[in-house]
Length: 114
Image 1 (cartoon, rainbow, N blue to C red):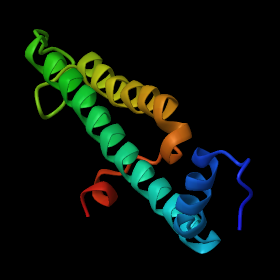
Image 2 (cartoon, one colour):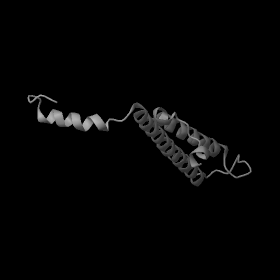
Image 3 (tube, helix red, strand yellow):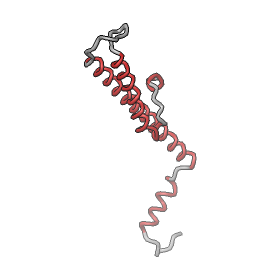
């Protein structure tokens, strides 16, 4: 029986917290699940941004390509193909640098879609 000098508020807090504290396994399960959700959402957002910036660079390069000399079988100049390749590379580089702490910078569209 608590003494009369103990404040009423602290007795109420003891009653509320004594039965509602999660066990260590429940707490670790919540932390693990939360970590998986954060990593999955980070990978989804990172993959989406990677593909968005890469496709935007690709479309910009193709629509602004005027030269047809020194072209391959598709009709694009070598400069355009190099620009498209650099666009994909820099898009992946920037997104991996932004999201490496969240999901490790693993951006594979095939894995993210499944």
